[in-house]
Image (tube, rainbow, N blue to C red; front, side, top):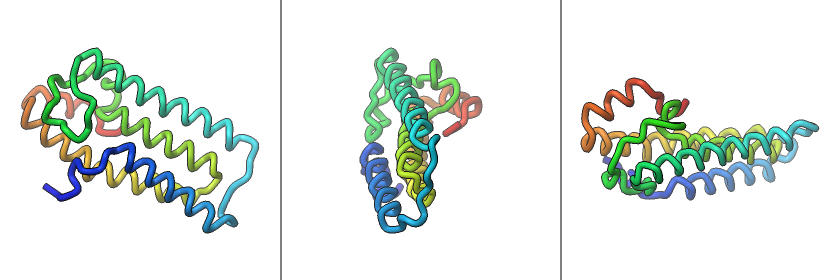
Length: 153
């Protein structure tokens, strides 16, 4: 167990990574892209990200289990239906899509470094500790779910 496990709320990590992407875009303006499709693509990515987030939240509410990512031990069910048939972490996928939308809107390819940082940080300090807690709590049912459904996509 690491000192950072379940310590920083994932939306805060996403906002910090968005700020990093913005700083990279401002620091290296010559590395930005122009294009007519940039903003429509950013909007489409943002809508997909919001859809993933809302679908994940809705499924948790339907199953009456906690949505607090800092307390996975308080989960009362392994949600396996809805969007959870395609990804075990739709809310993190949604945040990654929102961050991708932001980077696309900025037109700053270097901002993809912030996206990679987000995925790496969330995987190591949020998802993996969540998986350990859920495996301990739900055992074979959770293990079977993990064997069927990918962590991200």
